[in-house]
Image (cartoon, rainbow, N blue to C red; front, side, top):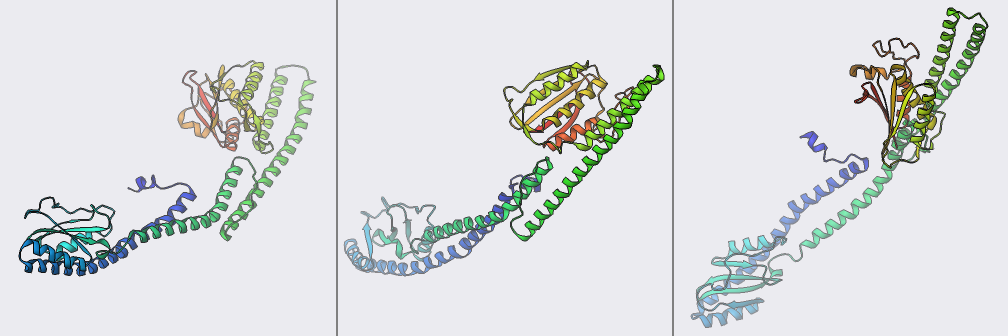
Length: 445
């Protein structure tokens, strides 16, 4: 029951606030209308009906004492005229055209009470008609001289225009709800702005935000600004520190590489040169992971063109890489960080070439996202190890990493980090056609 009920509730803050505001007002209106107003009108109708019932009984007594039918009708008309009633007698002694069932419209708030009171207070009631003539109640009675129809002003039997009070209450409730929602919206707007700023910062964007609203919202906004500033300083400090470390490491590596190149060529020197080259690659990869894409601004770029450059560069290195554009006319410029996206694709393509012989890159662009699919024909990654493979410095000890010692296990972690900074994700799976790993880089558009 609870999950089914939650599916009908609004998810946004504005929708839930409106529900909290409107639901009590509607409930109060219903309670007041049913428990007080309806009973009040029924009580007034009951009191008014008693006086009319006494008058009708007097007319019936006059008819009973008049004797013949014609004289009884004349006497009844005189008395009815004094009571502001109208007499419409039927010919014959049968009910004839007189309806034998009561008639009332569904929106008549006091119609049911009028019919019940007349039938309870009078004997011989044939029918009560509240529909045939507006503003008049036609009461059909069985008298000693035959059926008789009396037309009674509706205002004498029930309170006039009871619906006006409901209309006034409804209009006043709508007006007060709108006013309250306007004030409530001013209180909710700072919360929505704080959520937007936090979501944008999670995607690597810094939007302008100033704390506003109630004291609690201002305190949360100020705490968010302090947190954002500390994170930005930490990222900047880390980038500067690692850049310095990278520079300091490159100097001795370069001297070592130069010294080895001056030695006579043999197997041992070649092995040392490969080790130095591997160390340089590891330093570059580590620095790329630490730097991320925090220093790059968003700009309009063509995802297909970025993928084409990555594929072209990979092809120059001797790899067999194929590009497929499946955007189906949805292409175009998209706001992203081109260098970061290219770095993520290079890592995925290089990872595929390192463990397979051929790689296929597919680009799909829709209204909501940009999807880069990188597939290879390598051994792939088991389903139970794919989540662990996205962790930094993760190096799987299965066939995928056998005889491939290059790298420190940061390629997939860098790609996943870049995807998250674009509001997307990196999903690993199995290629249905090539049989190896399928890496889907999804970026929010």
